[in-house]
Image (cartoon, rainbow, N blue to C red; front, side, top):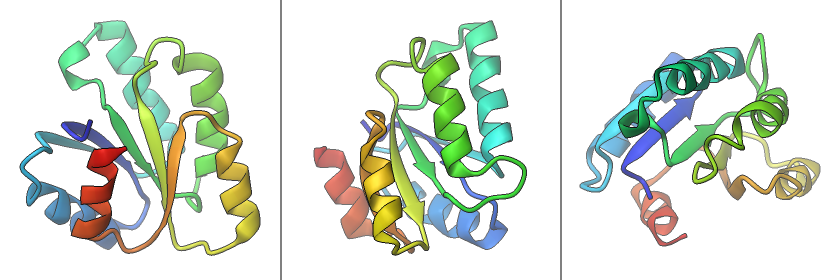
Length: 131
């Protein structure tokens, strides 16, 4: 499940740390990065137009608090527009938020399989392989 991942994160240092951690996993083959929800939607739009199935991410690591288009707004648009075309893609909320309301809201999205508080660790990544 972790072979192809899209990391949607606005903080450059967090992006680099996540990419470094993912590169250490033998199951991760490719990591794509988007700096906000709008860039992530554009990524899926390009995949859909090009029909580039080898680059379809199986997992989205999604920050919630981002400029331009936040994680919730991304999920709303993805569910309406792209989910029918990327049915096997799942999302994990990867955030600094510890708000119980955010955790409850995340459960309302069928695409979201987990809610993780930053930072991502190798143990967390191993757990995601089992989901």
